[in-house]
Image 1 (cartoon, rainbow, N blue to C red):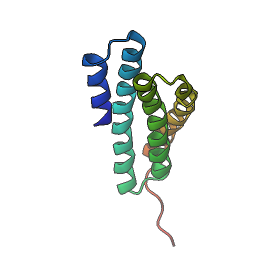
Image 2 (cartoon, rainbow, N blue to C red):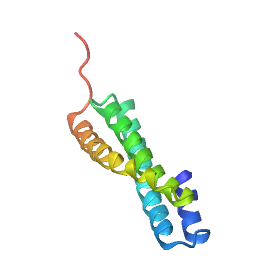
Image 3 (cartoon, rainbow, N blue to C red):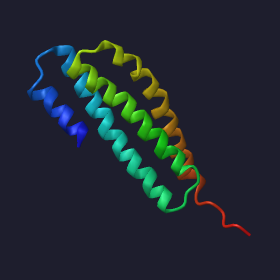
Image 4 (cartoon, one colour):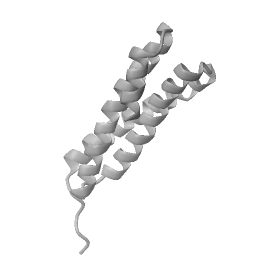
Length: 111
């Protein structure tokens, strides 16, 4: 919901080009990573290994990356840009963990 709101505000309410770009980027990444978190949740329900790790990495990375861009665009506080690069590696690690989880299959039952 927040990604859609940020994207809509960037398109219809923001006039500064750089802020519009940040809101668009934040919305795109936010929406993609929200779907990835739901994929991780589905894998968790299937008891796939590493799915919980993937979900947390994707959620943390998506929030740090997208929300820092959104907040920077809305507030103009450039210090928030220091948080954005932290989100990127977390998102990449989350995608890797999601792929491993999907390929690794379910946890083995205890003997």
